[in-house]
Image (cartoon, rainbow, N blue to C red):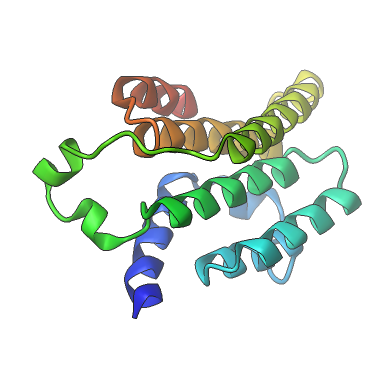
Length: 169
């Protein structure tokens, strides 16, 4: 029962963290990234991380690997903290009155490290090709994930908006 409630919320969160660049960037069908997101959708975050790690081992210079790894950390933390539960979003007033959540500092450190690696790799690619779609998508995903973390875990809505604006740019 719990997964039937969580899956639509997770799907919406994943979609809100992405843009339409990805399909043009790489062929995802049956790739480790595709498999990783399928596993995340089914709340199997450990195996999803294994898929993201597998992708990174084969594509060391692609910023999508660490960006997706960061997404895995974030959504596993969302699951642990109850953010993926539908009652979290039941009404505007309940959402506005939500408390700042107690994030795991080790998960935060891993999340930040994955995002830093993704951004470093993306910037290196963009220095050579300002239209590199994987790099652009990784930067957008990174900003979106930061926005989600700030808003949904730290309850820093204005900071979240800044990251959202950064993702749009």
